[in-house]
Structure formats: structure tokens, C-alpha cells
Image 1 (cartoon, rainbow, N blue to C red):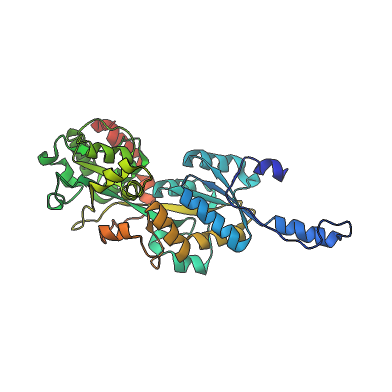
Image 2: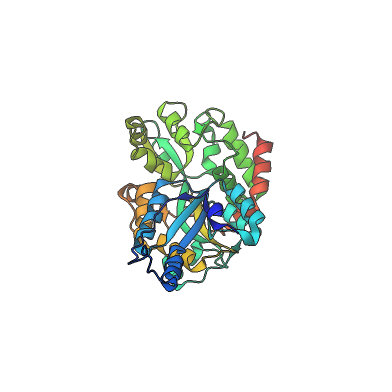
Length: 357
């Protein structure tokens, strides 16, 4: 297999600098050439569905610290999973990275991952944030919260996801489309915790209270709140951090008018989803790949990712940025992330049945 051709489409996010004494002269021995060749092979190849600048900086820092070059292919999770299945033993991918516990479970079920064995990772990441077989390792979490207009809504009016279906919120609720994996996993969690009938009732109740038909992403829900289209939105928490720290003054202004509320604190907790990393089944560089997982789940990298992407770190030793601290601590749902994939199809069926477009 021609490795250079295979790696040509990779986006290289980190450079490996080598200083080899006497490697350019005619007197270079075959042994020295072999040594140089081995050094040049210190790489780790990543297929990722996370497209964040913060991740790219962590790859760069890892390379500078270890001398291991990181090559990255970006794509949608489903297409990357299919690519790994198609490539099989010939794949050059060492790691698969994606958002959503259901997608991670899907990757595991498709037999493209293998267990990761590392005491460092076990110390960095709590058991609840890892696959039971260590076929994927959590790297960050994001909460699905209620975001509200601070000038029109007070926190004492908010309580649970279920309460969003009450009459007082009629014509005031904003959410993105049911095609959003974030919403599908939220409803999947309700199916697991409350049953299909209750999940369907909730979906139907939210549809009745929509301020408008679902449109755009989570940022658009925040902007619609600011514009007065609706008063509350169902959003991932990290988008509020991104808006608050945007280079666009208008987005900063939007964030200033928003409050963040963690629902269901007295019942089964706020829905949390996870980003994770898996070692591919046919990795050619498993040691380097494991080192990158160890690095990305270490305290320093975790703090950087949280401070720049406003997700919650999985490493309990990592300190959260001030904006996350300002939202306060919260209780999260206690469920196996695999269940998000287990109930995904049923969640889609319920959305279709209740008219959540």
C-alpha cells in the first residue's frame, strides 16, 4: 500500500520537527537512514466528526510535546464510520472522535473499535464517562439546557423539561429541528427514563408551545430569543459560551441577555451528552493513539478545551472557565450513554408522529 497516497487527503494539524545530525551527506550510513525513517513514522491518524479550532490546537501542542505528528480527516460521523467499515484492515485511521453517546455506541456496534488499556486514562476519566469495555473514552460533555430571556423570564418560573409543555409557555418555546442529533438524544433519554408514552406526550406538548416552526441551529434559537420571537429555548450549554466570547459584538450582546437554567434538578437531572474517542480496531499506531487519548484527557488539555469550547471537562481535576462556573453546579441524568443510540430510531418516530419537523 502506498502510504503517501493514502495520507494525501489528510488535513495535517501538527508538524513534526526532526533534527538529524549528518543525515544529508553522502557519508550517511544505511543504519542512520533506517533510524531516520523510523522517526519519521511517528504519527497518529485521526478521523474526527469534531470540527473545532480548540481540538486542532491540542493536536498541535501534543505534537510539540511528544514529536508525534497528528494527521486529521474531518467528516460527518456516519460517513466516517462507513469509511472505517469499508477500509477494514487497510485503514490508516488510529482514532475515531465524535460527539454523542449514541453515535459512539453505533461505532462500537459496527465493530470498528477496540478496547483501550491505560492506567493514565482510567485516572483521567471517571468510569461513568467511559464505555464499559473501554471501546470509547469521554473527552468532554455538554448539557442540554433551558436558555431564557433575562428581561422576560425569571428562573423561578422554570423547573423541568416537562414543564415546558404547560400552558404558560404556549407560543414561547424555541428549538431546532427534530433532525438534530442533540434533540434525538434528548428524547431518547426521556424514553429510557420515563417510557415511550411519556416521551411522546412531551414531544407533542412542546410542538403545541412552539413560538415558530423549528429553524436553524442552537445559535439561531438564542438569536430568536434576543429578537423577541420566543422567550425560552432548548439549547446546548456550550453555545452560550461561544456567543459570549464571540468576535462579533452582536453575538456578545445576544449572550448578555440570556440566562442558563439546568432543568430537572429535583427529579432525574439535566440531560448531558458526551464527545468521545475510540481506538480503531485496525490501528497501525496504537501506542501513539493511546498517548494522544491520555494527553487529551489530561488536566492541561481538558482545561484548554473547556476554556475555548465551553464544554464541561470529563477530568475532575480540570478547572472550568469562569463562565461555566457562573452557571453553577448541577445534577445530571444518570444513564448509560449507549441508551441514546438504543432509542434513537424510536425518538425519530415519535418526533414524526407528533409533528416536530
